[in-house]
Image (cartoon, rainbow, N blue to C red):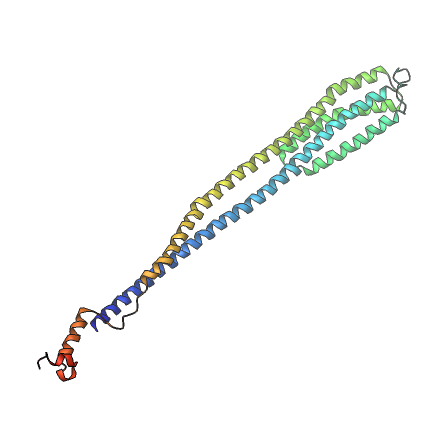
Length: 287
């Protein structure tokens, strides 16, 4: 029975060791699961940040940069068109050899100038209502200041044409105003357009920088969190597959075969009388 007691003690020690290993495996599993959750949270956070940043960048590029830049280009084009319409209107002078070329009234050019000026006024109001940056307001105020002198010369020329005053002096003053005040308006408006283009470029560079930061965070989550967690998971799986088999206690044998038990069996057999032994042994044994 001593062999059975020794085996029971060994089995109890193995069971305690198995419970300790199970506890360690549980902690490892918690660590692996936490690492996976942390890496997933990092990826989700970076993805949300990237999507929101892309949305804001697109809004900045479209609403705050490209739309005002396009409206500034329209202002430049309408200013040039008004200069052209006034020059064409002066060709309707009765003594002008070009009067016969125009098969329409001078009011066609005047109406075009009026429509262009209404469009310019609408664009300016739209731009003013959308300005929130002090630097943008400063640049656009320079555009409005240069336009005031040009508008005064345009009004003088259109009034003269409406009154039928096609004198060369009136046309000369307008041509000079167009080359000076008109070009100043186009230049100032072009500076405002360039300001908006620079803002769009800045938004593009910021988006590129956020993209690079996102790539670095993804690499960090992959190599610092995801890859070690995967390796730990594989090690944990190997431990669970091969570790439990060696730590489980084996069932006790029904017939102990230790040396001590065999000696006990021999002593018991010797104490049995010969009459109870097998017949072949009766002739040789001594009592």
